[in-house]
Length: 552
Ligand SMILES: [Zn+2]
Image 1 (spheres, rainbow, N blue to C red):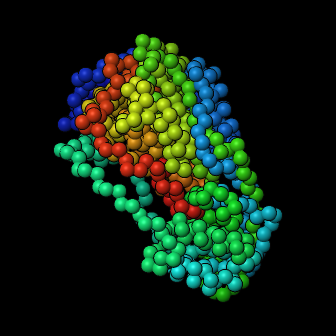
Image 2 (cartoon, rainbow, N blue to C red):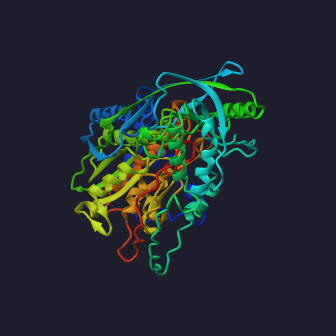
Image 3 (cartoon, rainbow, N blue to C red):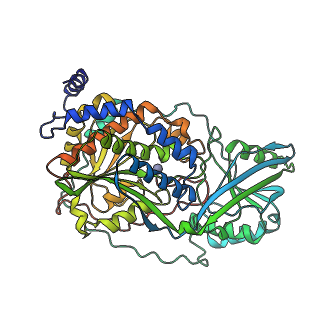
């Protein structure tokens, strides 16, 4: 026994009421020690993140960048000794899209550069476009009649213009910055709070059939999707040159998402402009000064992107080879940066975990299967397609349904793994807590469970939970994720914290190895205890432009 282990034990003992020490689970501490050695001495995580982000760049679903990164990951895993590496296609149904060039300048009242990101699945400018800026403010909660009448009223001001959509958002100074790390006490409270077990599930509420919204319905406010669709068509019909949205965040952060139709013919060229430039132009227009802007945007569509791929490879099992422990993360990213914390790092940690296990020569009883998903940012599409094809759902099971022990996911940035949330009964968390008890010195403090099925958002572990399978998501220290890097133009290699992600790989490799070796599968909900399936498993598409999406 090492002194490190002793420290871990004494911390655990001092946390009264937190954990019963390894009553049942007997992790192989000798293998855990080898995992730590390999992870520390020969880590490949930063090299993997470097290639995924710096070489392949933004990895939007359907793009050639994502395909190239997927091919590279396969090659890399083969060189580490993984078997059965292959790409599994699924139908995305939209062309791939990339932005190749975007320049933005003010030419009047003063010459200056502007900072923008292009909205995905919008067209380019066909050369340099120059025009005067105009700002419009849409009526709040407009009905179809009000919206049409508003647009009719501004029709003559749109042709040949750069159209700022919406007032400048004033972002107040932040006096209480987001904490970089979670406090142990706060984390333990979360991990020890088991979700209430409902005595009996109430009957499902009958599905309310929504009457179709008619454009003639003068009472009903339009949905955001309807407003964006009508506005984009109006801007196209009336010859707007570029649509400009306010990023609405401080320090030049820009979150650029997609034209939710993912059809470049249904939107004008569209950018999200940093809040500081948008504010300057808004103030100049309020002074009644002429503002002239110039854009050059080159985008490209890829019909072959209608088929997207998940990357799959395995460390084959032995006496229980038909049973599987899975781990993974999404390889696709948004396009405003290179998607380092969301989610090249989740992929790099999972790849590192299987590299370590292969390098130290373990012979797992169950098959360990790694999956790098695509389509996560548009609504967990890749993982959902995989689960549907291979496992089915609790209500409609395929033969492999009963053979999956668990799926481990990482998709919350660059922080240490501080805990895990598993879809399952209390026993699921007990196993994970005991299996990881010797990783407390790395910051890993335990596990909790959830009964949530079918949230329609979140991350790829939800595709497994939605089907009633043990999806396990990792809880990470926040670092700068929600406050700076998540979905922004600042999500680059520089934001990766090397020490944290090395520790994350040790925790994942150890946990996955233990689950591949223990006698039983990870406990899961019984038939009697299984939460009801989601009414609709189809997640909502994010809205146009700068508004946040629900996928991580
Ligand atoms: Zn993500």
